[in-house]
Amino acid sequence: MKKIYILFLLSAHTIFAQDYSVEKSTFSFQTGFFGFWLNNESRLSEKVTLKTEIGLDVFTQKNNDNEGSVDFDALVPVITFEPRWYYNLEKRGAKGKNIHNNAANFIALTVSYHPDWFVITGVENAYLNHQVAVVPKWAMKRNIGKSDFTYELGAGLGYNFIFNKKHPFDDSGEVWLDLHARIGYIFKSSRKK
Image (tube, rainbow, N blue to C red; front, side, top):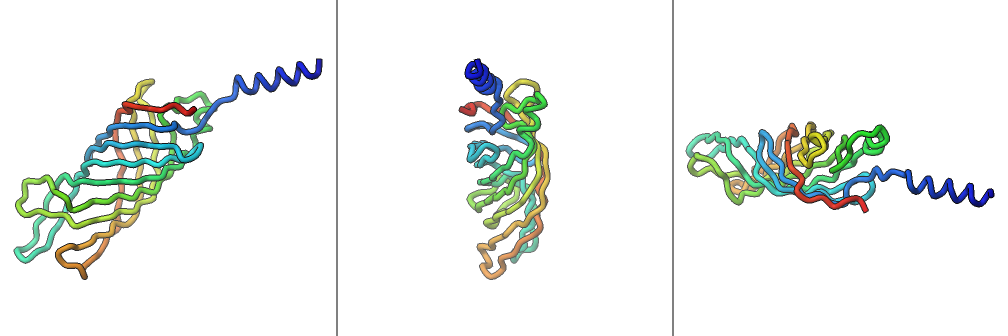
């Protein structure tokens, strides 16, 4: 009888145990006030993912050249790598909240590369120096209802390294404020197992 009772407890634990880990992989499209992006988020561990993305950022640039200063707003390409730690996934899941598609709060280290490939703007002779921004940030990701539409909100403060191609000894940088406000659609998701 004792063996049957122990076997029952073990099987009940297996049946009712919840998996509060991040999704294995998601592919999505996101847009916001500052651009649009295609991305993949892949699981590295139960609570850590690596988000990789490519897209176009809205960028404000001030260029100083021989003909004076040229200020412009433009769309510029961006490649981003962002490890994320979803620190409250288990807490949200245990409370019965929707954690599908990694809907939880996270801390991330965003590394964004803005190459000087092209600039989409109406200003002639506009260019963008190579830039790499490194920003630690806090953010949250939530589902809109029970759909595959999501939104993300967050903020971080870091540094943007600027590599001046025209004047190689004039490399500089600036403090970088990352305001993160996006809405997106996850078009492919691999479940946890």
